[in-house]
Every structure is written in structure tokens, then in C-alpha cells.
Length: 288
Ligand SMILES: Cc1cc2nc3c(=O)[nH]c(=O)nc-3n(C[C@H](O)[C@H](O)[C@H](O)COP(=O)(O)OP(=O)(O)OC[C@H]3O[C@@H](n4cnc5c(N)ncnc54)[C@H](O)[C@@H]3O)c2cc1C
Image 1 (spheres, protein in one colour):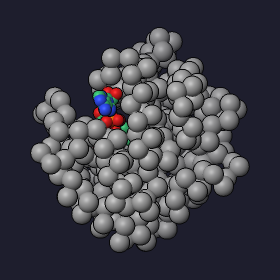
Image 2 (image 1 turned 135 degrees about the horizontal axis):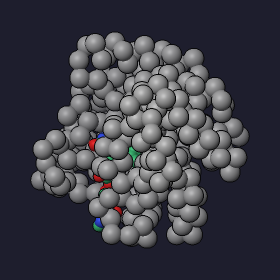
Image 3 (image 1 turned 180 degrees about the vertical axis):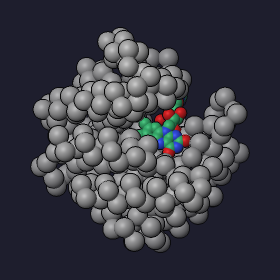
């Protein structure tokens, strides 16, 4: 089922979960337990990341196909431009289409470990909008999601410019937008307004990452450019050495964030699960 059809048909908000392909067999077994826990919550779809630099390509595709055909959930496969020629991307698209996958999150992608900046591959794509264009041109059956950044993409000089390029992705054929994680709902609401004013009318789904570990979230936010409000940092500093307190606080914070987003009528919430079910389940039970 295409996510855009789910978004258009459902009066209730959609809930979705994101996973990454684990490195080893133990991680994979743990992920299947997580997916089995979260399946009980009846998510509208789940998504699987495409490791930085395309490092998890085979695992991503295998997982997406197993989620669809063995687990029985609707998957969205992330796909990036990193290190791939256009013809290789076309091969991947043909392969997943043949396996019945209908949803793709089209991304430029992050560079491989050890490299600082994105390099346009020879014969490949330099920006996500080119990938969207390619999918639309040759594989019109896919429903296409793209990434949005309420606090702007870290490489972008201004939010205005970033939104201009977000519109280019939508004009190229993107059906909906999933956002980067954020902790300040006002930044998200302002982003919605600016997107609407700039002519972006596709659904925008906020991305929420429950905080479960202080050092980890500091690292993530430094990389992705999401701001942590002063009070959030101060509160976490006080409890950072007690993992249970951090998890409890992070869950409570996410519940409040989600409640406000739902009250204001968002079309869905996408949870960055980090392959763990506990926090997401607790949040979900409070808000759904
Ligand atoms: C929901 C979500 C899921 C993600 N999943 C993955 C994943 O699975 N694997 C992974 O590697 N990464 C993933 N990422 C991270 C993403 O790949 C990075 O943020 C990457 O740096 C940018 O990708 P993009 O698709 O947003 O790029 P783009 O939309 O191409 O934008 C990249 C930068 O270029 C600018 N830009 C865009 N178009 C133009 C243009 N025509 N001219 C000049 N500048 C332009 C933008 O403003 C931005 O600064 C994800 C991000 C999100 C929000």
C-alpha cells in the first residue's frame, strides 16, 4: 500500500517506526524482537535506513523485503545517491519494485565514515531532487517520501534556502515529507507555515526521537543540527549518570511533544526507534 494513499484516506494520524539494519546476527535477532513488539501497535508503515555511504545496501533491501512478505508490515525503503551511478540506482529500483515494494524515501545521503563531505558520484546524482526526478521518470509506481529539516539542513546557509530546495523535491515528484528529529515543537510549526507559504502542500510528518541516552543524543544533535532547548539540556545534565532517569525523562518529554503535535493536527508521527521498542511503546500507549 502506498503511504500517500494511507495519508489521504485516514482521518486519524498515522504512526510509523524507523529501523536501521544491524551489523551482525545478534543485532538482527534483537531487531526482529523489536519489530515483533512494535507490530502489536499496528503501525501504518515502518522504514529501514540505508547506511551512510550505502554501506548497508544489501541488508536494507533484504530487511525491507522480509518486513513486507514475512512480517506483514508496510515498509518504506530509504535510498541514497551516495556512491551509486544512475544505472545502479535504476537496478535497485527495479529489484525492489519486482519484490512488491511501493514506498521509497529518496535521499542524497550522508557520506561514508571517515569522509567529511558528500561527493557527487560519477554518473550519479548530486541532490535528492535528482533522485526523485529519476524515480518519477522511470518508476512512476513508487510513492516517494523526502527529508525535511525544521531547523534547516546543517549545510544550508538559511532555512529559506533549504525550503526552496525542499520545494524542488516536491515539484520533482515527492508525495510527502518526513522531518529530521527536533525537540522544539515551535520550530516545527514555524517550518510548516513557511513550507505552506512557499507552495509546499504535501503532507509533512514530524520525526520524533525519544531520548534514551544523554551522550548519544548530544552526538546525534551535533551531527544533524537539531537544537536542544536550554531547559532540556539542564534537566538532562542533572540526571545523565542515571540511565533509568534519563529514559523516563526522555519518554515523558516525547509524550508531551507528541500530544502537542497531535493536538495541532499533524497527519502522522514517525518515530526514530534506534531499533529499541521500550520507549516507543510507552509513548505510543499514552498518545494513540
Ligand atoms: C527522515 C530522514 C531519514 C534519513 N535517512 C537516511 C538514510 O537512510 N541514510 C543516510 O545516509 N542518510 C539519511 N538521512 C540523512 C540525509 O541523508 C542527510 O541529511 C543528507 O545530508 C541530506 O539528504 P537530503 O536527502 O535531505 O539532501 P538534499 O535534499 O539533496 O539536500 C542536501 C543539501 O543540499 C542543499 N540543496 C538541495 N538541492 C540543492 C540544489 N539544487 N542546489 C544547491 N543546494 C541544494 C539542501 O539545502 C541541503 O543543504 C535521513 C534524514 C532524514 C530527515
